[in-house]
Length: 372
Image 1 (cartoon, one colour):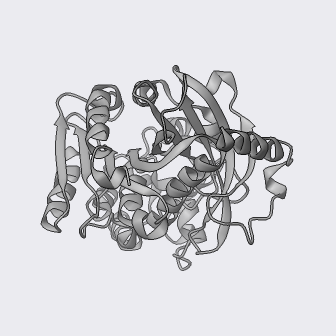
Image 2 (cartoon, helix red, strand yellow):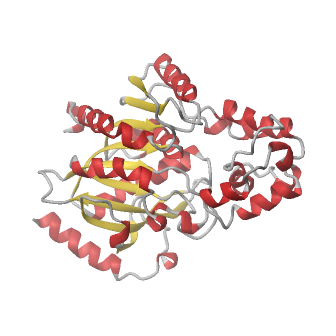
């Protein structure tokens, strides 16, 4: 009861705190909420008891403190003794403009079955928007450490505003699978006060070197994620990258559009555009992207907690990439299991895998380290 009263007092002060953009993150501990607002009803998943949009302190790609936004949702009913167990969730990439943030755009219909299954199973769900998406400044794009920090720190924020347990699992889909894996590799060192129990990545974006090779094929369709890299690479630690050195005028138009459009609309704008249309020299561009993203390949050294991977066999993002990652993790000594989801594509996989994810989570939260 005492913890509940403290949470109510904290919530009251945060909701009254004003615009999050005015908050000063300096001197605040990681995961500290700087503003909290009720999540609009239309953005809530079925089975939500209470939900908030939260702005919280995290670590930028640069290593400095920053403010990231996200959401925290808890199930209906009374929390169990010790609080709701937590899933820190990394959503799929939807674009870098603020309007594309998960806390603004909501959960896409194809992703709702997994989120609702988690709530129905009794898990609080803390979702990050990632750095610079939903907050001032540009998004940092593909940056493993920044993604991991945003995911771990939204779990810390959940601890400040809801009756949740310190035990948590990192779960993610697509780019969020990349974030979840990075979070799983860093969780025990970055947030030792939490009890990380394992990682689940569904259709994760991995093997950047192999993926980037496709950008070197002149006649292949342009990957609609590439224009976002044209915006984010110059503002992170790849300071020598200039979009105008690699993109044609048509490609630069799409890079500019990536600053305004979410993924679905940008994909429509890029329909029919080939790598030869977008790049000055496609083979060189593919090699350059592979080199720039090398530092953000998911770590494959031994993870301290179990890792579970799933990927649809009909996914345009080849399941073979996840199978390769699973093999690398196993070779590094990680407790890893990979399950191909027969017939599922990049969008239908979430509904198909939801029951399996719930089973995996139950197994992860069972060991002693999850209950210490």
